[in-house]
Image (cartoon, rainbow, N blue to C red; front, side, top):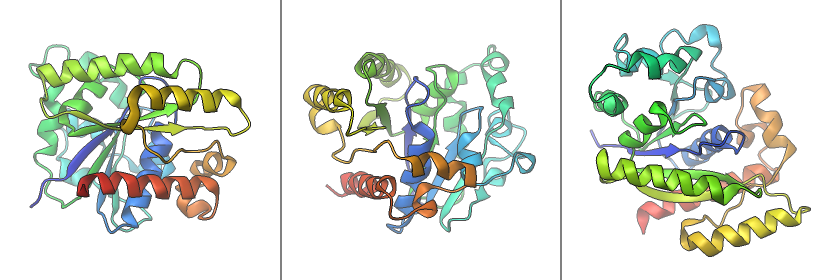
Length: 257
C-alpha cells in the first residue's frame, strides 16, 4: 500500500477559512481522480458538519483513535462524495491536552495512529484547530507539508510569522521532513483596498510560496456548510467554486514538478 501525502491545513487564527479550504480543496482534488481522507482535528467538528456527518453518528471519531479506544480504520466515514472520506471530530477532543499531560511522546500520538491506516488514499488533509497547542503539534508532527489559509486583513503576516516559527521548532525536534507547501489567500474582497495591499505584501515576503489562486469573499461559500455541502456541490459556477478548483490544480501540480 502506498503512503499518502499528509497535509495540515493550519493557522492559529480563527475565522480565516481553514475548514472551508480543507473541505473544498479535498472535493476539488477528488475531481482530479485523487482519493482523499479528511481528518477533523478541531473539537468544534465543523469539517464533519460541513460534509453532512450528523453529531449523533460520530460515536467513532478522532478523539477515540488518539485515546486508543478505537482503531483508526474503524473511524473512516463515507461522505456524499465518492473517494472523499472523513474521520470526524467531537467536543471530547478538547480534553486531549489535559488527558495527555503525563503521556510520553504525546506529540506523536496522531502520527502513530496514521501508521495503522490500511485504506488507500492519495492525500490526507488535516483540519487543524485555531491554536498552536498539542493538537496542532500532533498534526504537524504527522504531516509532510502545511498549507496556511491567510485572511486578507491587516494582522495577517504577524500571525503567520508565529506559525512559521512553530513549524521550524517541530521540524527541528519532531519531524525533519516538515515543510511549507503553500499559503492560500482567503476572503479576498476586490472592493477593499486593504485586500490588495495585504496580497502585495504577502507575495513580496513569501514569493512563490503563495498560491496564484486567491479565494474570494463569496456568499455562496458561506451558505454551503449549512446545507452539509462543499461549495463545489452547492453552486458549481460561483466564484468560490472556481477559485477552489484552480487551487486544487495548483496543489496537485506541485507534486508533479
